[in-house]
Amino acid sequence: MMAFSACIGFGLFLQSGKVIYMAGPGLAIVAFLLASSVMWSVIACLGEMTALFPVPGPLFEFPGRYIDEAVGYATGWISWFAWTVIISAELLAVSQLWKFRFDEQYLRDVGYPEKELGWDTYGYSPAVWVFIFLILIGVINLLPVRQYGQIEYIFGVIKIFFISGLIVFNVILSAVQRVPVPNNNHFWTWNKPYGFASDEFIVHPSHDANPGVVIKGSPGQFLALWTGITTAFFSFVGFETIAITAPENKDLEKHETIKLATKKLTMRITVLYLLCTFAGGLNVPRDDPNLINIDINSVRAGQNSIYVLAAVRNHLRAFPSIFNGFFIFSATTCAINSLYNSSRLLHALASIPEAWPLWAQSWRRRLERTTSRGVPLGTVTVSWCFGLIAFLCIKPYPSVVLGRITNNAVISELISYTVICLSYIIFYHRIKDAAEDHTLENRHAYNRDDKQYPYRTHGQLFRAYYGLSFSVLFILFNNWRAFVHPFSIPDFIASYIGIVVFFALIAAYHVKSDGWNPLKWKRNASMQIQRPPPKVVVPGRRRGHLELPNPKEPMWNEENFKATVNFIWHWLK
Image (cartoon, rainbow, N blue to C red; front, side):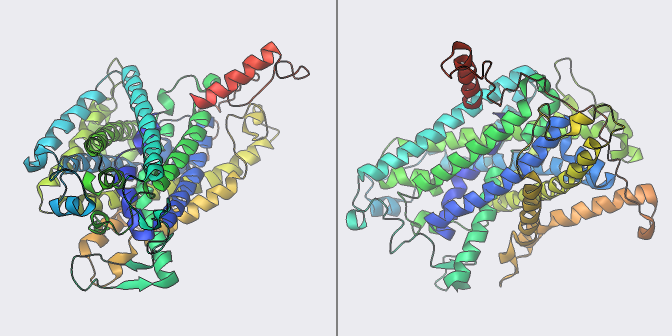
C-alpha cells in the first residue's frame, strides 16, 4: 500500500489528459499499457532479488554485487536524488493545484450554469502552500516507523477507493449523457472527427497561428504514442518502494510480503490506470481547449485535468472542487512517501563507508544513526531540505519548471531500472549455477523450481531483457522533441543531464579506487549470494498459493473451504 500510494501522485490525474491530447483516447490506453509492461518487468526483477535477499538499499546493493561496485554506488546516489526531486515536484504540483480557476469564456462555451468556477486561493503566493506542505510532510516522516506505516496504509486505501469511484463516475456520465453529443453516441470521443488516435502530432504546441513542425500520418501517430508513453511513465514511478521497505518489513519468510506486494501492485496499478484513462476519455474530446493549452513539457493545475473537465462539461457543480481537493491530497501523500524513500536510500548509503569520500566520513556516521523508534533523523532532515527546490514556484512559468523537474526525475529512475534489469540477468545465471553446485549445503535455496523459493515468475529472464531494452530506449529518446527546431537548451539539459552525472559518478569511484588511468580500471563485483543468507519459505505456509489441506476431499470440505477463502482474502486485502 505504501508503494501504491507512492505511485498515485499527480501523474495519473494531471498527465492522462495530456496523453489523450497528444495520442488520442485509444492510443492513450496503449501508451499506459506499454508503460505498465515496463513496470511489470522491472518490479518482478527487483522483487525476486529482494525476496531472496532483503538487504538495505536494494536499488544500489544488487548492481554493486553483480555489475560493478562503482555502478552500484552511482545508482544509489542518482536514485536518492531522483526521490528528493520528486518531493519538490509534488510540492510544486500542490502549489499549482491551489490556482484552481476556469476561464469564463470556456464556461460559457460548455454551457456551465455558473459564471465563475474556481477557488479564492488563486491569488495567493504559491510559496505559502509550499511552506505549509513542506512542514507537513517533514512532521509525518518523523513519526515512529510503525505509525508511519499505518498512516501510509490508510492513504493507499483512500486512493484506491477514490480512483475506483472516479472510474464509475465517468462511466455513469457517459451512460446518461447529460449534454448533447455528436450523433448521440456513447463513444463520440472515439469516432470522427476525433477518433481512436490523433491524426497529427504538433512537436511544439503553442498559441501562435503557425503551429510549427507538424507530423502527420503514421509517423505522427507513432511519435505521439512514444511521447505519450514517456509522459505516462512518470505515473508509475514509485513501485520500487516495495524493495526499499523490505528491511523494515515483517518476517518475510512467514508473510511473503515482497511476493504478494509485487504482484498486487502490478495488477492494481495496471487495471486502475487503464480503466481510469479509458473512462475519462469517454467524456472529454482531445480538442478540448483546456487540453490543447497544455504545453507538453509542463504540468498545469486541476482545470487541465480530464476528470475535472468531464464534470464541468456535464454541468456538475461540486465535483470539480472535490476532485481538485483530492488531487492536492494525492500529491501531498506522494511527497510524504518520496521523503520516506529518499531518506531510507540515503540511510542505506550511509552504512557503506566506501560510498563516501574521506572528507565526508564524519557526516556519514551521523547520518547512519536512528532514533529509538527507528527513524533515521539525519537522512530525513537532509532529504527534506531538497524539498526547498519547490520554491521555484515563484518563477514566471512554474508549470514549465515542474515539467522539467519531472522529466529529470523520470530519467534518473529509468537509469536505475536499467541497472536493476541488468543486475537481475547476472543474478539469474549466478543462482542457477549455485543451485547446481553440489558443494553448497543450502543449494536448494537457490533453486527457482523449489517450493521454498520465495518468489519467482514465469519468463522472468525474458522480462528482464524486455525491461532493459525499453528503459534504454526511454532514456535515449525520452525528449526527442528537444532536438527539433527550435532547439530548447533547458529541456535538453533537464532530460539528459542525469546520464552525464551517472557516468561521471562511476568514473569518480574508479578514480578513487584504481587511479586516473582508465585502462587500469577494474570491474569489482562480489557476486555475493551468501550474505545475508537466502530467505526460504516454510512449506505449508505459502500465502500466495492455494494449498488444500485435504486434496482428495471436495472443495466444500470445511478445511479446504477455509483454505480457499483465506487464499482469496490474501489477494484481495
